[in-house]
Length: 310
Length: 140
Image (cartoon, rainbow over all chains, first blue to last red; front, side, top):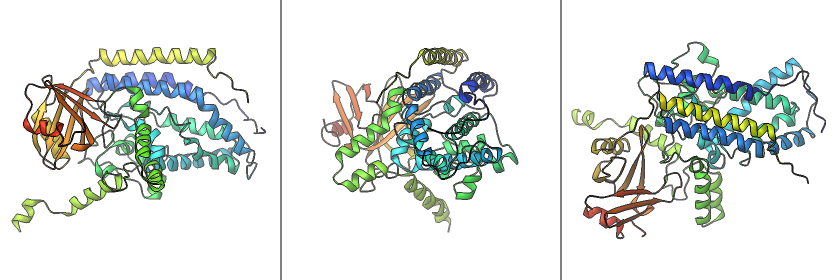
């Protein structure tokens, strides 16, 4: 393996950020207690934190697989980009774009949703929700979305460094205690933008996939602004009925298994595995698209009292 | 191929520290009083059904208000369970739920592992519930 060495020692960014995470969570709890802006529930937070802990256990156990894949693909890179400032700037944007597409597809395809759903299962939205992370990300091959970057020639450790920075950035936006942020919101992902992303209101579904920069959503047409008249409701369309971390971690994978074993054709197997979440052969289940279409139809239909008055 | 155990001393110390911090934060949350518990009543069931665009035609609610099962106007069933300060509801065709009523105990099982079986003690068992559990939707 002949990846170029970084010109500086790359610190363990996430490990260094953990004390700040803990402090900010405790500060947010106190702010919520005093101002009633936002919500906490200790069993919900316990589940979120247990998922974060499990994510670390699985990361230690299997994270090496992603690293191996990065270095293997890097052997076949198109360019020798090396560690220079212009390359680092380009890598920041490229990593953020890769995150956008990973995140979007993680919502649009059930295979990747089976891992990512974990992050959306809380009906609360606070800083502990940020730590509600998947245990099956590496085994679910999430890392493939970053392989094009190392194939182009960005050093694997540079890509990992910006992935870590993105993850740390995304921590603070999981809060209801911060409102709108003015012009900052034009370019950056903010608590307001990310509340929309976590919301299950039909109006807000499938929006704001950004990691650090919201520009990708604006560019690819997935941006939705938070509407003061419509408070976000959080969670998943079919809310979980459990705080059990193991059920949270694996329920969607078990759902795929159940559907695939009952499938009647290869087309059904593929649909249940790689179709949109909620896909079914007869269309009897709800997908994001069908929920949004139903909502849009209702918006166009005048309420009964308006019809009666005509 | 040689596989090394990824869990060395440094990793075990990190995980031990993380576990301690997790317990600290849960303790702080509990200490600050974030231990709210919702309660299900007819009003809550009506609200949940309305959000789904249907009405409640009949319902059984557990005495402690933590679980409920309702028959909806579109023929589906709604199962609700208290999740801390929130209520989590599932809507499903009656035949998608394994419903069993025996000696005033109701047991509703879903295929979905994300919604564990719901168990309730019943004061009385309405006729519609018996219909569901005796073939009108049950597979028991």
